[in-house]
Length: 338
Image (cartoon, rainbow, N blue to C red; front, side, top):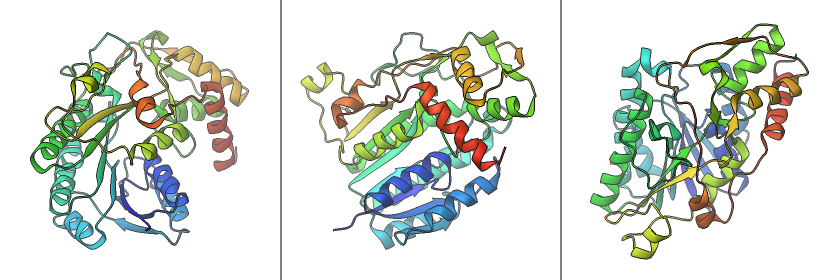
């Protein structure tokens, strides 16, 4: 039988590609998006328009926290899977606008959890972030590491959603997987992300800002690899309780709930200057560089241990940075007719 999924944030960068992959796999998809103006709404509108070309896609333009909305959607569609991607994103924006993160990330997620409690799906998957590892310096990051020292309010709200989801998984026996993303990039990305900003600045002949004087590393994850990981996890719903063998194998499965945390990252941190060089090569121009101190809330490095993802799904992200960046720049040049 054809299965039905709810994808929140479906007009967003990751949401669009996730919905597209599910539609291509034969799912019916209900896409919920508030179409907020955090960045150019035209990008969101075009992503949604492409999804609406599929007969299997239903668009709902509304906020997660709208009273009764999610409960009605869950009752009507009886979803087989939930992919919860909608959130207020951005480390730096959370310093200036923290209340928007409370509404979207906390109140919105609560409404989703309440709807799942009323009409339980087979599996609920929720997005978290590598930012929850915060001040941790032991790398690579493992899902079983302690994450009690977030460096930004954005990260704090995502850590809170992990705890909220665990409590509902425990109380109501709802299978839940949290996936922690590591610096996702690719075509149709958000304009506030580094690869987008750097490409735009280089093409326009403007300087690029390089924080911490370039002494930074990121575990960059290409969008296609990320979506493949999300989709593969749908049929890997956690079951409780965790066994001693699970724990010995490094599984993050909870001992008291059908709940698991999974990193989705390449497992290969890239130096910031190497990342910039890949963009320069793809664009065919050298950037004018402006070196600056570290920004508040940022961290010098991220690095994912993706072995649990590979154990659960049989694969892991592997796209080299130069390949992914070239694909992004090709899209950018075509989209903006540069």
